[in-house]
Length: 127
Image 1 (tube, helix red, strand yellow):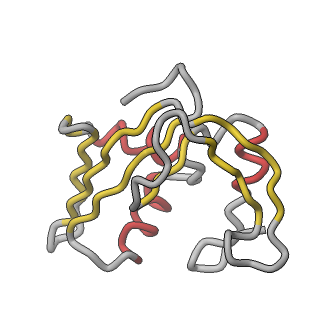
Image 2 (cartoon, helix red, strand yellow):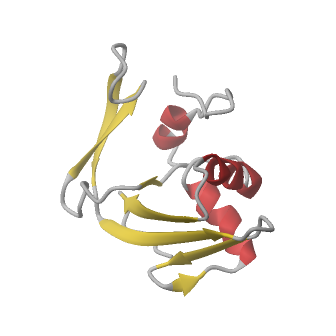
């Protein structure tokens, strides 16, 4: 079972199996459309890791996050600025419980500007 940096369990395994978590965000582009995404519980470098699912990457979208010095978040996907209401949907689809939890994870990165790549394994959602 994986935890968020603040200690709470992510429950990503169950969220993936229940089709609640329907994409993942990564800082690298090593998984491209057509590549297999291995879903692993425990992390790639954990000795007790277990692959529990595998899906094909269907699309990659660029997600740019800018965090102002006042703590406000601007999120762009493929150049389109998301409305604040869309932040919750993005967070939920990536397995977070709330937009606040997603923001907290972004703040831990300790960067004012973050580029992430959304790796989709479904055909029915695009931002």
